[in-house]
Each structure stands twice: as structure tokens, then as C-alpha cells.
Length: 275
Length: 254
Ligand SMILES: [Fe+2]
Image (cartoon, rainbow over all chains, first blue to last red; front, side, top):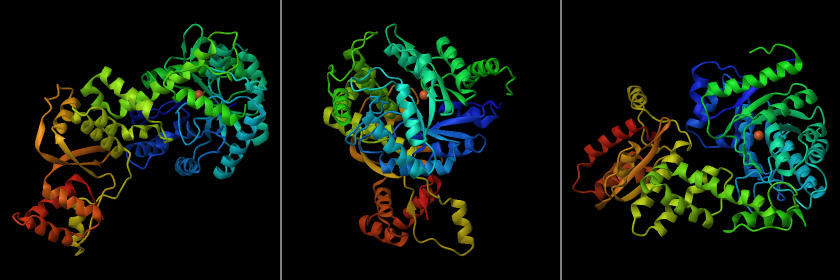
């Protein structure tokens, strides 16, 4: 079994990746940060891409938008996709705003048949346009809706079955939502079909006692590591990375944290992970 | 409730100045009540956009201080929604907002405008810059270039205060000088050289010349127009020096 571990590329670490070869198998870039006209971001991207395989991860597709995905956004995304030639391309199963406005947040959808139909139509359009399967990530949420007719994992399963898209399972987001809504995180994991998961995210959060905010500014917590182990046991090895977006430490620290993920995978599959 | 109604109401709730509760949120027996849950989205929206403004208008924020900046950013966020998928473009109208709100402190808007144009130059379009060496090589081959275009990141603006000095001081983490209204407005040029945004003041003659350049005039036409516009000046000499400086600044493309 081949293991592969990645990190989210952040500007703070450009130098580390340019200076010498780092022990990661791939890098995830935030697509939106490179959908710019020119200058340093694209130069750095090209230089680092020359040495590392990449995956693209977006935050503004708004796949749950009733009006459909913005064609201009898709055009820019495709242009970047052709430049990077990523192993896969992901965004979030959410919506970001309506009436041409962007709230710049990953807003949750009700798990209803109507939402399923909107998402199915949009995913089909995006996949047709990009000529590749889309990978969708489960988001952390703080509200649940009266309109929901199924669980989140049933909703994810349906989206995959109806569109052929794949999932980026964010283990931390499962944990955060399970804490905030009082469901069993293991039930979520066991409800997602084996074979539908392309990537795992691991991240830290802020626990405020009676609720958790998904801040990506802390190391991965113990409970999330436990859940990661469960996920590996169910899905087999899935390419894994750590997401840190705030309070970003030295690269060394993130590599050490990624080492914890390697150790867990090693334990689960009882084989040495090549670094 | 349809998905359209729900999304519409959710969005209004986030955008409204005061957070309220909503009947489409499922009751939770666990943790927070529904209004507190919605407040997380309501707060996060404001925090996120304020952070973007603080990042884009770094020097402006340093100049006026955190508390004041936060208040001004807050009023901007309440009055302006984002219509861009790129969150970095959210602050486009912030300098104008500051100009309207701070009628007696117009240098703040000028500083914010400088922060904005420098940030836009940072990831603005690339261009094939003509260097002095390339031009000399062409000249040696007997090729003469009659017309240049400015790089796409080049912008001109007019300053009424010592904003450039204020910006420099803040950038060096020094105490900024007292604001001074200039006797004559100063022309300022911003652009990107290599990876870095640059700015400098330009004379009235150079300002006119760059304007002609932007309009697509060839070198001969610019020279003629300058001679007519500035009859007292030694245009032949000045224009030659200007072009040499433009080559060093890397603002010319073929
Ligand atoms: Fe994630």
C-alpha cells in the first residue's frame, strides 16, 4: 500500500519549499489565491509546482447555489487547472451567497431532496465543463435546518451516487459538527461509502466548551486523531494532509504533525511508511 | 420552505446589523440555542471582512490605530457587501468610504488609496518589460522603437498631502510625520517592478508624458505635445532623461 501525505501551501512557507526538498508527497493550493492576473503568486506557484505534485482546493465555487455556479468563476478555475494540472480539484459542499453577493463563508445546506437536486445539477455542470470529477468537502456547521430530511452522510452519499463526484472528508469538520449538533462522529464515518473518498483533511479548532469553532489555528486534537484512525480503518489509506490557516507555525512543526498522521497510518496498516 | 427562501433569509440575517433568530433553524437539545448559533455566522462575516481590510490597508490601519480602524472598517462592512469571489477585492471602495466619512482627515483616504493601488499592482497582469540592455541591443541592430506602452500595473494619481512621507515612515516602523497639506498637488505613479509594487512622485511634465503614453501616443507625438504644453521647458533633453528613467523603472513594454 502506498501512503501519501501533503500539506496546504501557505505563503509563509514558500521559502522552505524553494530552498530544499521537503518530505511531503504533494501540496494543496487554495485555488482562489492564484486566480489572479499575474505577479509573485503565480511565479511562486509555478516554481513550487515544478518540484511537487499539487491538488487544487477552492472556497468560492458555491456548489449549492440555486442560480448555478458562476461561469466566470469556472472559466478562471479551468485556466488555473490547466496551468497546475492538479491530481484532483476540490471545493466545499456548501453555498457562499445569493443574488451575486459573496459572504465569503462556507454556509451549510439543508439536507433535503431539493438541495440534492440543486447540487446534483451544479456538480454535473462543473464536471462537464472541467472534464474531470469534482471532489467535495464536508463543512463544519453551527446550525441544522428544519428542512433537512436526511443525515449529512446520507446527503453526501446521494451526491456521490447521483453525480459520480468524490469526497474530501475533513475529519476535523466531522468532529466539529458532531460536537455542535450532538451526533455520533463514528456513525458519520461508517455512513460514507467506501471507495468514494479521495482525500482527508486534518485540522485544529477552538473548543469553547458548549460549542466548537472550526478555526484551523491549533494543532489537531486527540479526538480527531482517534477519528482519523477510524477513518483509515474504514476507507483504507486515503491521501491525507493538515490544514492550517491561522496562527501558522514554522514548516517543521507542521511536518512533525504530519509525522503523527504517518505514525497512525503505520499502526493501522502495520507497515513502515517511507518518508 | 424552499431552498431559495432559506438562503435568501440566511443571507439577510448575516447582512443585517443586528443578528436575530430564525424559525428555519432546527431546535437543538445540545449546546447553544439557535440564535447563538446564527450569531456565529453573523460575527464571522464581520470578523473575516474586517481582517481582509486590515490586511489590504495595512499602512492605513497603522496610521489611524486599531480601534479607529476597526470602527471605520465596521461601518464599511455594514454598508458594502462583497460581489467578488476574490475576497482580496473587497476593499475597492474603502478609500472612497474613508474620504466621505473623514472629511477633515483626507490624508487617510489618500493613504488608503495608495495601499489599495500597491496591493493591486502586486498581483496585477504581467508584461514583457523592455530593459535598457534590450533597447541598446535593438539599436545596435538598427531597430528603433517608435512607440512604447506602459506596463498594465501602472497607475497615476494626485496627492494633496504628504502621504508618501507618512507611508514611508509607517513602512519603516517609524513615527509618521505630522500631516501637511501640499502647496501644489503632487502627481504620484504606482506600478510593479519585478515582484514588488513601487511608487514615486512625478513632475507635471512627466505626468503629462505618462498620460500620453497611456493614451497610446508614439514617442514623436508625445515629444510634440510636451513642447506645446510646456513651452518654457527643455523638452528634448527632459524627455530623453524621462525615457531613460522609465527603462530603469521597468514601466515600458513594446
Ligand atoms: Fe477542510
